Image (tube, rainbow, N blue to C red; front, side):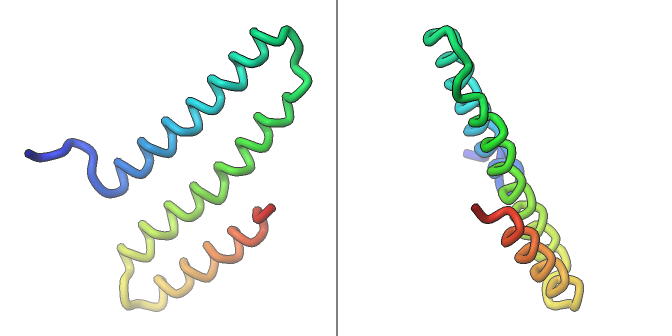
Length: 87
């Protein structure tokens, strides 16, 4: 059986579904509690998505340029951006 989502598409799909479900839970909490006292969670969710996106892009680019200097540069840039957004 051949799966329609493999590799990079599967990673992106799982990541988007994870973040969408978390956003849904935050909105549901707002409607159930009646106040938006923890609105900072949406900003934290965005800040958590940035390193995931950077890692996804770097893994894709490193795989594309395997064995070249570009792969090393992508790896270094990805690491530095990851450290910038590390909590």
